[in-house]
Image (cartoon, rainbow, N blue to C red; front, side, top):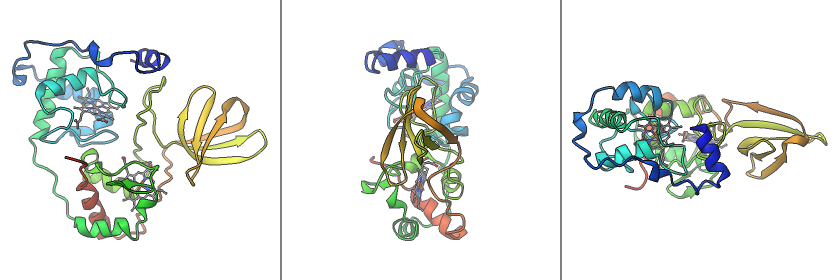
Length: 270
Ligand code: HEC
Ligand code: HEC
């Protein structure tokens, strides 16, 4: 998989017709007819991005009755085998068509579970988001806000209630994965870096992209700096550190419930 993404990167990404590799099964029978190793496969290959039980994580929750990119069972199998080009959802070429069907079956079963019930009031949460939280200075939501932090318009389908709460009180604990192709596999999109130039200037911010020679850093004010790695005196990376402040002390437990309820209600365009 890594060699292939390296190849894709060398070829400029677009030269590999990703979906053309998908074995097309003309006799795509009813999905319920496949053996039940779907859960095992899901847990070994998918939970690190989609969460245990498909409750979401760095990738969208899959425990929903309808999936945007997979309206039909056949489309679901196609997404698994072909990936979503240009995102961290890679093509799972290592799965056979039958294995992909059992994973699809498991995902559909997750979608039939009852939805999560959350205690907070979304309207009160919205007031905190737009007021005291100051969230719009970094995040975009429904097209409003400043914007280099993750877009929160569909965060309610990507993260469960527990994960939303964790984002607020323990930012950086589970950072989103960058959608950009990387020869080293998926990497966090907002890694904290501190670079000391040969002239002794210290730059702090988050990593936007990096290869063997160059690192692009975004400072807190949004300015991008392209740094020649071979000429840096020091480069320090701090995984798990977030530019987002923790709101554990800012908001009461009830207020956090309201914010979580508001975020959970953000499900993007239908
Ligand atoms: C490296 C992280 C990663 C892994 C591992 C991963 N996915 Fe994904 N997946 C994503 C991302 C990111 C998206 C969202 C792509 C988009 O639409 O922008 C996604 C989207 C999807 C979708 C479409 C969801 C929708 O709302 O339509 C399905 C279905 C899916 N993945 C299934 C799987 C399955 C099954 C596995 C395991 C075999 C898997 N994924 C493994 C990152 C991952
Ligand atoms: C100083 C900028 C900043 C402010 C202010 C800020 N955030 Fe964030 N937030 C970020 C960054 C950067 C990330 C991604 C890195 C991470 O998860 O640590 C993030 C991640 C998140 C996530 C997880 C998103 C995902 O896709 O995984 C949620 C939810 C979130 N913020 C909600 C909020 C809310 C609600 C507020 C206001 C109460 C807020 N943020 C204030 C910068 C900010």
